[in-house]
Length: 387
Image 1 (cartoon, rainbow, N blue to C red):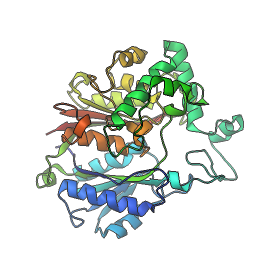
Image 2: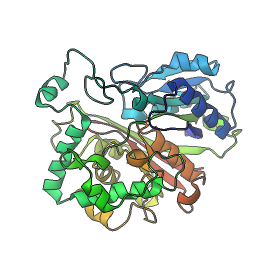
Image 3: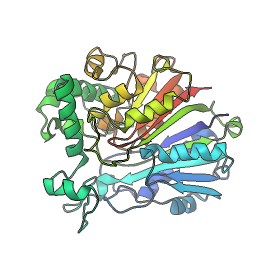
């Protein structure tokens, strides 16, 4: 028996919306329940990443309890995952919960106001923003001014470029391709066209990553409903089967100490996932790959086995991942042009495609999808298929 996804919902997202996080969450939850044909009385589980926290402005302002109360849920099972297989943790845990009978329908949510909550002294996604002291591995990165994941991803990109001859133009193909998809998605934040010239002229952030290699902080919420297979039979849509999952957590728990910086935890996660299914990369129609930074996309392409190690630049240059490609990546615009929902938006788009609701960006006869979330040492991967 497999766990399933029965509904997805996203709030109206944007930059500096100045709407409370709970307003976004309630909107997304209602849309997800309507998508699934469920009511609040059907939801008996709730799960989130990473739980309520104030370590970065607007990053995770809502906990399971207040969301449960705001929606009027009568849940008997709940979970918040600060540690785990990346941002996919709450969805994977929800799948295990329905398989073990802890719940029948689990509402998994991600809500944030990173755009509205930033101030001159507190910036979203900057390590230790607003804190007086740092410890752990960050304590030796921050003195070197490696304040942001853009710096850490820049190291990885530099090594990958050196080893395999990738150039900024290859990353530009990722960014411009996702922008082309975003223009076909009315929910995406970035709607203006972007040429390769636009990409290359943008200011540098952390060599070799420029402005358009970095995802966009937004305000918004996304909800995924995970249901037991037998409970899903009465839902409004044909459920999407979670065929396989994989997870990774390196013992080093740092971005810079992996033995091979041209790989990530993604490679371990995907290897774990493929062991749990008879399906192969050639069977996949839609790719939802974590793109906190553009360099992550080639890493995930290789990790999932769509091309060999070091071959991603050629795979991308051949036109495989953009509009009209054989393996379209992040068809909703991804986080580079759609907005950063820490992977939840990517899974939302994968489900949208499998249900045939992609509109102008719909992938013809989409039957299966993979989703990878995470960067650096943590990762979660999932394979979905139509039942």
